[in-house]
Image (cartoon, rainbow, N blue to C red):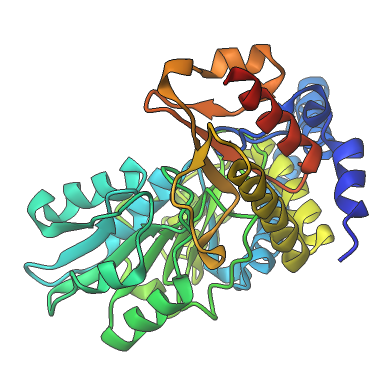
Length: 382
């Protein structure tokens, strides 16, 4: 693989990655210049020209075309994509819309982001949500399967766990779910456009993505995938004019929901955020899905090597190669009292926790020099 394209995109599109050793994508991502320019151009035009009905219709045409781009990223169909404000909001579309049998239970993990757990607490009650227990940030698929019984309806996961960086074996889990008629629901916010996602190959039923991390977008926009095989099994709990089959015909009241996943959209979208999202998705596709994953994981392997050489540092896990992601947690002596502000003052962006770990988020605009700068700074603390 030719890695020069990653250095080229870093220099041309990510000035913040040159100002800082930016390893904090798992908190918030970095705007590409293309994304920033597309959003600013939209705002400037709206400011100077306003928006008439022709412009408004064009925005919807743009959104409908963007569904195809988002679908290409995860090997879906455009009709299976809808846009919304956050992964939490999108997960609730499934949670509150899917029909469940009485006494159904849901399986998730003790590593999951709270939204994955809370929306199921709200739907089926805390007593019917089973949390698979992790060990040192690791949670093999078998620990999920051990909790399954005849009443299990859903396995709901963060594809990559933000609390440890564990990358679930989605293919194995998807095959297990398919064979037992269990829905597989994922939040992929922590790995979209970093780890390759194929919703068809892995039998994913529902997937939600926020754009403000690995997609390098703004808050308040994201997209979701709903498999065509379950689309009609989800009853929309909220309905608006934009989810109608003919969203522009207001000559009479005729509620006829769209044939596709956009039936779950209730109103006008975040047009500004979608302009940035479009550029982020295209940059990823231009770089190549397989190459991006391979490159990011090569930097993760390099970080593993650097930490293994240290007497003061250690890793959460460490994880086997196939379960690694762009998120890595480094353990440091808690008496160092590191925090995000200290790191930033020293030119490094990463998240230091109160428990003596640093969460490192590696993306395709990073390089080995970033890893070196981080580990050299940490070594200087000892």
